[in-house]
Image (cartoon, rainbow, N blue to C red; front, side, top):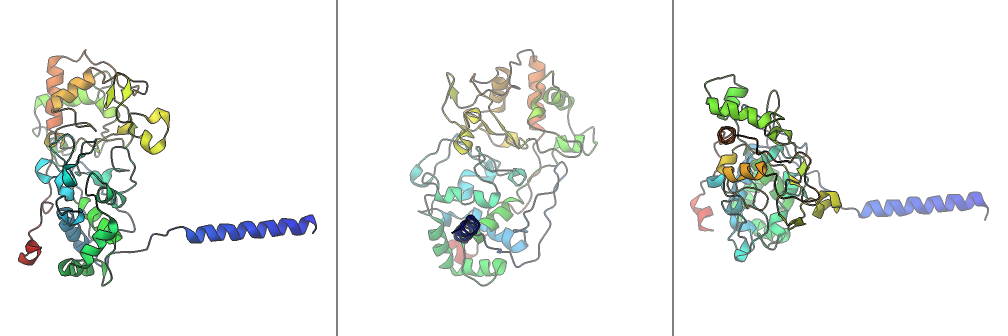
Length: 363
């Protein structure tokens, strides 16, 4: 065989191998809700809600997602729901440093607030989930959270006449899959947004009476580079404010004597420079959901401010923007606290537990 024929034989083998590999890759379905898409109106201070093209929200998917969010049917022993760790009574977060799952097992991280999670580029403290849809798979399968499987959830929902009816209205008459579950929950969570706070009415509504002078002074402490410089990561725009850069930073949390108790982003990237980095949380409504930080180690906002003033816990990866702020006066620290309190916005209606029918309540 001459070299020309050998080359074409090898090329054909490579093409065939690539075709075989591609045919074996899992594909995500083009599943779409059947209802009419609805617009989620963003309140004053927030930009339009990002909506993925393969999951436009409808009235039916939002209502279904709300029901699923509060239903412990997702957990192995019917004791834990999404709301167990992300409760509306506590700013859609958990009042405990770490949450209890099935069998009262506990994890190692504090449950972050679901409020405004629609604007997060990635989910979880370490960013391991790329979307709200994907995030809804993790807790169900986590052995210290819901300790269940996606297959069991599908079987339970398919065996429930009420859910079969609700899913048919949202997704059409077909067997219930977990893709429908996660897309419905994500659509509901995209409605759990909050702004129009006193800060927003002052900053973006131009109402000078919306906040006190202390808040206005605290805003300067928060934004000025020669003061707190908090807005370096908790960003504020000219027309709206997410109060997060959607990036990862090491601020010295979960560090003891320079050693990492929790490696954070490193668990996802396996890059040494990412050890101790965690996602910047949105701090809207921050006064509603103590304790704070990824490990839930700080009981109130005063402790958080003091932590930053002391430049966190020293370690090799400490962010370059973290440095001692002991030059801030007592008045400036008090004003900064008042500013943080002014970020408490309006909670939208229809995001609490749904009213169940008698049949649903008996299940």
